[in-house]
Image (tube, rainbow, N blue to C red; front, side):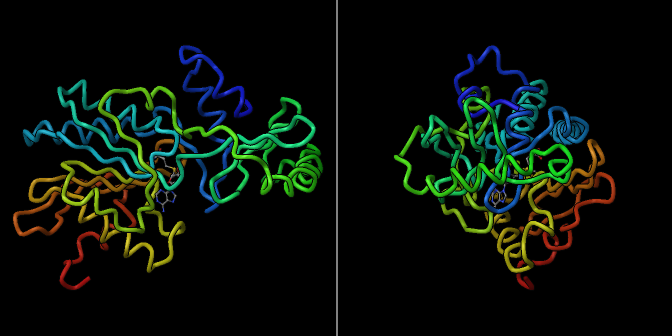
Length: 280
Ligand SMILES: C[S@@+](CC[C@H](N)C(=O)[O-])C[C@H]1O[C@@H](n2cnc3c(N)ncnc32)[C@H](O)[C@@H]1O
């Protein structure tokens, strides 16, 4: 796993998908979700969605990808759409995009969320996770990690501002027609209302991430971001590598969402989207 200093200092042409996955896969955010995406994991669903769009003759001019994480799968969706002749403007969101790389005593550093949550320590060039895996108790990393938290943790709050960094693939950050914004899906964002022909929520609207109340808000918000009749919504969750369970919806003439296609068992929150807005 690279340190944040190594990752953000690496020339773009040397940042491979594998290198990105190793870096982002280790970052556990303040709301206990991971900045984790695996290259190629959505390829099968991307292909089916692109086929369906082509069959219906739909033009996608505005795409919204919610909870992009590092954006690896966003790049892949953009590429799948481009291969089918679709060149949408893309908005990618995530609850956490901006972080700071701060200097700590003894030449150490930390990658820190704006709220102060530490994503990674850099101890003399070695990356240390502030969170523990079960394996850490076997390898001895738990003791090292706990000592790092104890010694460096108290200094994080008083550290000077540091260097701002964007927690997304540098390849995505440099793509044309791509805007990345920090956005919490449970809070209505007026700037997104009524704009999008295609919205994807992949591995985001999972029941275990959100309380029932938060999920209801997220569902209501996402619905308002769709442009109107004919717009598409993909909600999908991946279990183990490529075991996808999702639903592709389309906005009908009366404004309700209709199920167009299911992948695996369909989305676990499909019923929340198809419930009539009037009864929601
Ligand atoms: C498992 S990743 C999904 C990445 C990508 N969509 C995929 O399927 O490969 C989940 C992402 O959702 C983000 N997230 C968690 N809670 C969120 C919220 N309330 N609003 C927006 N994004 C959120 C996390 O920061 C994380 O980057």
